[in-house]
Length: 166
Image (tube, rainbow, N blue to C red; front, side, top):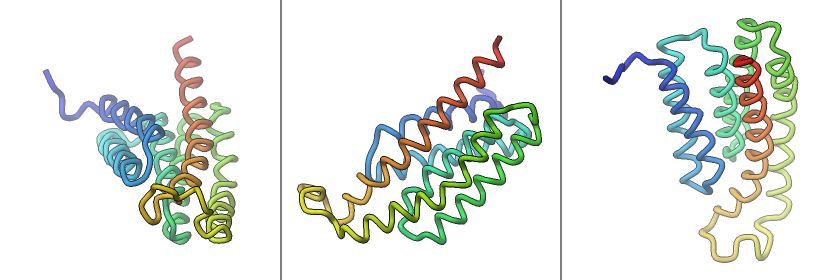
């Protein structure tokens, strides 16, 4: 029987959507990350002290921030992400991976600024946008940022789950 208050199911659903978003590009990636964020927020609405859901939600916010052209909107997402990492660390202060993720989070706005500056400097490099709709080439560059941040976070979350099972 389905349980609409199963915070764990919403958290896992959001986590799977985040993983799936890493295989998508353009608007499809944005939509999948947005769905991930919504499921994770539902999980946290039901059980706000789920450290794993907080970390995955922070990662989803980071991924969404890297798809933002507007640096002020990206910064707002990074700030929300940082709050989640901090709360997860307060809930599990012995968790070294959460500390590492929070420390790595400090570099996210700078990385975003570098990606945006590089895109502006290259102005849509010839060949990179070939066959893509206007603006879609941006997702190629930002996708690498998501892949790096998301990959590191995913590995840390999976390692944390394995450590918890031992």
